[in-house]
Image (tube, rainbow, N blue to C red; front, top):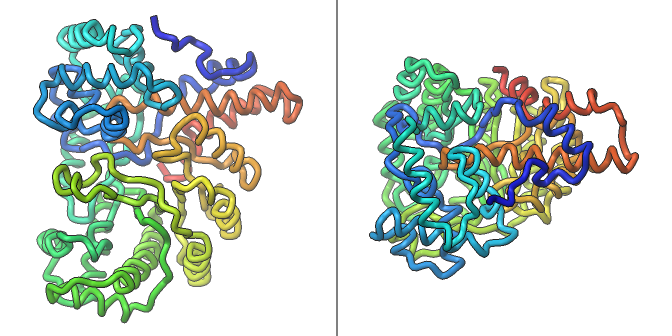
Length: 462
């Protein structure tokens, strides 16, 4: 039987009361994920557990590689069942890894399977889950609705097809799916296929012959995103860059449009200016900015060539964003153009430095206008979440926190919200039992409910 019990991660009776009375049944607002919206629209029934559990989930792929599993059993030609069995074998001894917990919870919550995941039980789990899938209509819609999700913000590039979102709306699902605006492929001027991305933007806007054409094309697409409901944007950078002059960015663009490569300083000039331009644009249209910093991507060139982007070969960067983020925010703030901002930091060494900068630019425009986002990616685990809460309480205001997200491509990732909620309730419950905060559980419970859901609803003006 599964080791996941009712009081999993809940350290005391107060934590249990906070979780079961206030947190557990709150809906989920997934304000940042990478679910493919076309899959949600098509809503096809899944054939087996592999399709739901392992296809496209590079968190799981990475764990398998760490255990020495051959790539043929991960992204290669082996059958779905062989890949599934290899993952179960991997997970059996992955003690302490968040996937060891998440995967077990996913089996229990979605399929009612309480067998422990290991090599010995792998065949039985495969049969049990596939039997469930055959007997029930397991689709993207059913999984999202089963998870009590009300809103999903997918992450979409500036040139993506937006008609999908109108079609999803016509389906009448119990949840809404809205795109978050992302211009990373237009920002990453040093990317090998940059000119192809520029051509894709031209096809949905107009001919881009000048820097002004590019700026107008980006703004035009943002307006189109807003028409289908967009409330958020996303920017992903290894680190925050200096705010360069527009002329420097223009030079880099024209050089790239001439078919020449740009050097590192030219790329930084372009990215630095475009980050500033985008955030100024988001402020103009009251679009919240989700800024992700600290990921060093595509470390393994051989596997990038073989499998492409987002396949599990990224890591934590040691580049420092602290002073440059301060200058960027100060410039925007002085121009009355600082948008609502959620900062996601991947390097835990900089938690407090970045949190204290964010506290310098708050305003009454929104409760927690400038947010320190939840523990993200490599920090999305028990240790990372607890440290995030400790640092947030020490340097910010937990009552304004917009809570958890999935940041995932997997439809089974929603138990991560409950994982976070248990850790949150355990953290607060311990403070209560230690006599370090109010004993008024009804008041604390309302704060918990706000963090789980209500704060995000308010923040994104839903």
